[in-house]
Length: 196
Image (cartoon, rainbow, N blue to C red; front, side, top):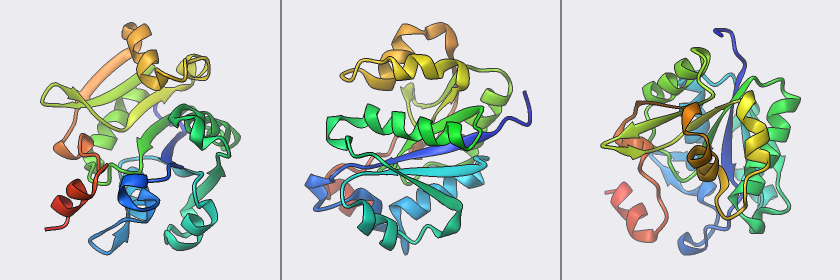
């Protein structure tokens, strides 16, 4: 399966209420989360990156400094949950000719490109779904080959992609991850700890 076209989908549509605005526009080491996450996913082997925007979409598009390598998709239904952003990302990835996608939330800006590379390699090796794990916990990005997309599109909103993993354990391949694949920034305290 080598030569697969793998598109990364960054979920960046949320309001970031606890952090005072879109998480895509938080900064770490001089980079916005969105630009940094796109760079790490591309470095790990994603051929294109789709950023799904919702809350303050035009502001995020204007300010995130992503360059021309990131394709934006708008999710007007973002308040209905993360799964709606996954669907918009899949739509865009299909338009771009994807054979598989990497689904990654923008609030996980520390994933190591080597972890991304292992997810990509598992997909290229025939995995239907590949996820990184670290210390017995599942992390991001999740890799989903096209064979899994109908299940993602049919998933229940309250279970989302996790429901697909639970219903199809036979599809799932775990690869070694890193601490960054687990590190989500959801609160001001977590953000302060990220920036000592």
